[in-house]
Length: 484
Figure 1 (cartoon, rainbow, N blue to C red):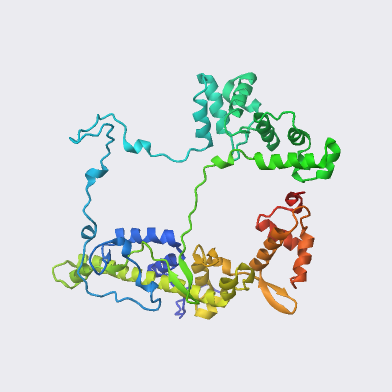
Figure 2: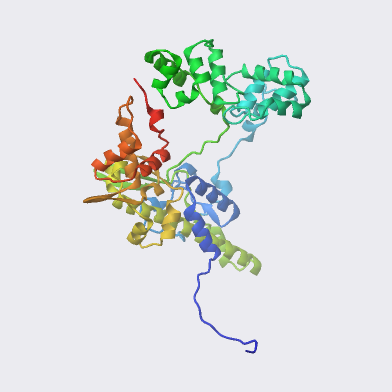
């Protein structure tokens, strides 16, 4: 067979991801907080895109909002002729003297400026101190020399988020170059700081340090922690009574003191973790017996294409290069506005479909959540499953039952004999309710919970109950046992 070059014509169809389509997909999957940042960035980059003032011309941007939240199927007239307003005109006059970086320790009506070396007001802006900073602040009151400070900094720098020391004394001696007695002395100094139990190597040592701080070295609680911690973890009161020789009531009292007054992780309250705030993208409220869907448009400005740049396109004074640039920016602004309104309409329609499928949830709670998959909503509103997946990711709905991610309403089906199938989240809610209503002195095992669910025509295996229980962070039966 000879090899040769040959020309051939072929007709084919394929999907091309244009920049406008990529932008629309990106806006669709942004959550509420990211959308605000994307709007601000687009306004700064595109001079043809501007904020439309309120009808009274007050320029208060807090009153702006997307009109699609009222009528989701209506498209605003993007070529509405209004008086063009520049960004500088839309902003109120700012007196920057009020924001001067001056800290006046002695105020006077003559407005005398303080010395140049006076502290700035920004020097007093602080954040919540972490565990390491909190320990260093306490160590500053101890008279430590430079070598001892180096050991202390090495120890505090090797504490994990739970407050436990993740290195040994031998490693401290090797890394810092000190003696074993010096390292042990500084470790004892740190262990005497607040919070109690800090710089321990294990949970057992941390609990012992806390009991010693309370002066309970010879107590029954100390005996249990020091020698029978495994029995304490399993709440084996019968074996604790046997090995300690104390009465059951005394054992129960000692265990309750440990669980209520001591903490196994003393450094956890000082962990430097950022808080992720959730802002609902859509509100579902019941008004006069009917549910009303309202998109969250707070702090989102109403956008428009600048009429000034439209007029420049029609003028003959601009050069060809300038007109091409302006035309590109105007098209980009028009497409951005269309993509934004399309995003809002899509979220509205998806939430409307979810409300139709999960009406019992909005009326009666999570226990009545129905099985639902992306295909059901996609077929209901005539969209692709990938679009529904993008809309429901990282989007939250404020409902009468609480704030839930839109993904929460989609769940696999658990069949029932002779009855309608239930969603997995609904069964989790039932398991949580069974655990809350159980006798704390005799908590139910996973098998017993499975039997109770079987009485409700819900037949699932014991391992499935254990999986759901672990997902809801419910401890096992031995850790839920409370003799009182």
